[in-house]
Image (tube, rainbow over all chains, first blue to last red; front, top):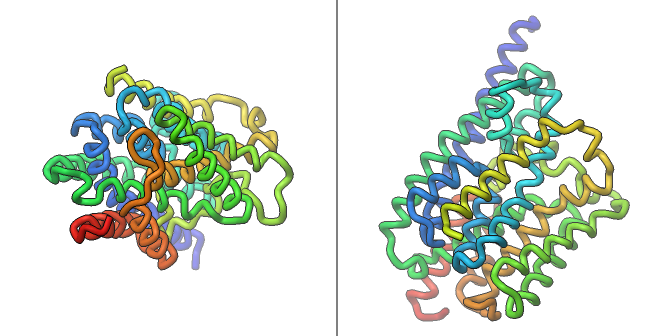
Length: 250
Length: 104
């Protein structure tokens, strides 16, 4: 195969990967929209979160905590922000690869999420990586926002969220976000400690606070990892965009 | 704090965190301990959120109800590699059916 033909083939694969990741992610925007309105946001607020925050895990955390009431707002902001730290780490990895300046850098920053990073860093050369990043990020952005609106309207029409199990849907959503990250014993240990700490604190502290305190369990990763322990690059390098099911934006 | 104010603050921080990675020198966060801890943050936060959402009720009181069964079904679905949306719908359906039957 000539170099040109190989490049064209590679380009086709990147496009297919980016679009399939985008579509899979967009699909669960519906659940975000529905859960957001059942958490007490209106349709506009649900859409504003997807449009402006645009990082799924943080959005789910924000609505999950603020569903307890507006007095939980500071904890909701803190939890969503802590979850957003990893996007900054992705940006550190991507800044050389993308070589963006000015307004394009602002746009790149906004679509720096699990999926766009995963597709970008899994390519073999810079050009494919840049195509993968932008195409994945923009596809997810378009579909995530559209399906958030659909989900919010559906959620609004459903009425009593508990009768439809929407509170349990939130539990399932967080479980699905966590699942692909439990890749080794250290991650499992951190998850167990965080869960136990959060549940023990819950009756005695204001809503959201247990989650923030439980985040300290991440310091278990401070010491040298055992073989195969927590991956220093987060999920970016080894998530597998092709089996996108539960490898979702967070 | 109104919902809009909270939402806009949280969104601004989320964007700022993304942008700062493009602006700071890469070696600033290269310290391996710091990288490992920040990479582990999502695990800790998401696990705490699963536990709180599943096992506590109003006022943070410990509660066992249909949500725990929903998470059990979700885990089975995840082991079978079901897509996110399927996991969420199965979780909701589990709780809805248990409540309809009056079991939880």
